[in-house]
Length: 177
Image (cartoon, rainbow, N blue to C red; front, side, top):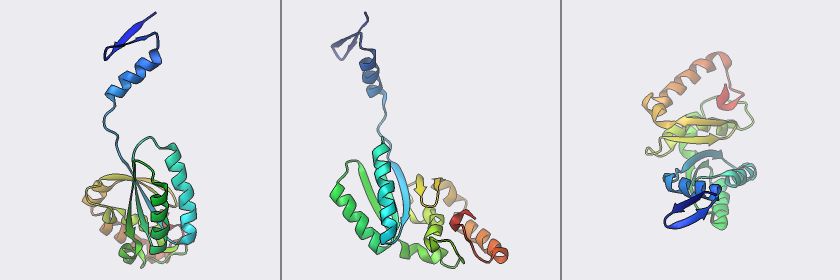
């Protein structure tokens, strides 16, 4: 039988407990996971609520949700988070009105309309002190925001989109064309 001593307390033969105690001492401060979601309109918030519930159920870290949303979605989602009052969850909102002009010029036949293209503006929209985050909408993407900002992302994707639209005329797959 093995006996371990941790902070003056003896644990006889319980290796699982000892591993947990050792791990507890080695775990660095919890890293906040940043999640960006484009959500606009009453019907879109229903789907996003399901997504949020799944993320909250499976999370192991503190979360910070960044919503690019219109006024209706912001009202619904802010009320939701206020009433749920989930610990270690923060929420920030960014108006679609502020980034819509960056993508509205792109001819688009995708069902999500201009909102599916707003992920392209995340490096511009999200706070400068945020260097990486995760984004959800028509797909899941990992972004190194600082690298995108350093390479002039807004100008780069705009130039590529303008060139492609000369032959394609419109997009049909949101930002995944």
